[in-house]
Amino acid sequence: MLLVGLTGGVASGKSTVSRILEGEGATLIDADQIARELVRAGTPAFLELIQAFGKNILREDGALDRKKLAARIFSDPQQRNILNRVLHPKIGEEIQRRIEEVAKRDPAAIVILDAALLLEVGNHGKMDKVIVVTSRAEQQLERLKDRDGMAPEDARKILASQMPQEEKLKAADYVLRNEGSLEETEKRTKEIFRELKKIALERNVKPFKQIR
Image 1: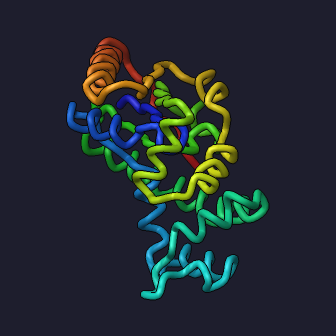
Image 2: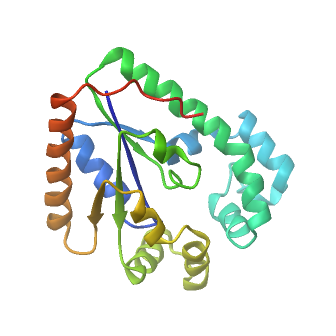
């Protein structure tokens, strides 16, 4: 099994790249999707978040309001640390469970771990390869506004809170610049996947390391 980390800044285009890779035959593990599942109403993580942040992070229907929570954590590093302490261990355990499941089902799989905080939590060193998706800051701001209806000031806070793109690039085996057309991004993504398939075929990949 080849374990590939996919990361990049917010609204850089990781989701687009991950969909293309999945369409080419990769097995996708999406850390953000896992996080959403873990904080569904009534789950242990959901209850821990209510205890830590109060009920004002809920929507009227009682579900977690991710936008309200994001506004809190991206303006206050201490609250962001609290969120990370609650969620990161649980996300790591679920990622590990899914990796092990794939390894048993398909030992030759190319597994893409789509994780925005791959480098921040130190999991990039546990990957066989790392893909970093980049975009220009103005593109990220525009996508946040169009995708999430986010105010420019809030979008800038999110960008400012993240690891600088230059730091992420230092860990990259492959850089995918999502700064042009969708066709260009798709072409580069498929090129990278062809290289990953060659690696998976030509060498014996070491057993995957624990994510926790």
